[in-house]
Length: 68
Image (cartoon, rainbow, N blue to C red; front, side, top):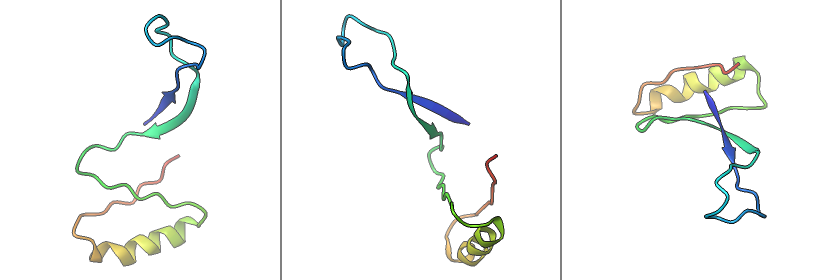
């Protein structure tokens, strides 16, 4: 699940105006103890092959998830 990141408008005073600005960026929530690898610019087949080669070398359990 993605969350929006907002930035306070530059013309607002810190203590007077408590309103939030418009969304500037989006972030993904990753719980402590988890590692997230994001692959872009390659096909799903290439990404799966890369993870299957790297997974036995990692000291953690791996899982392939497709964001959509």
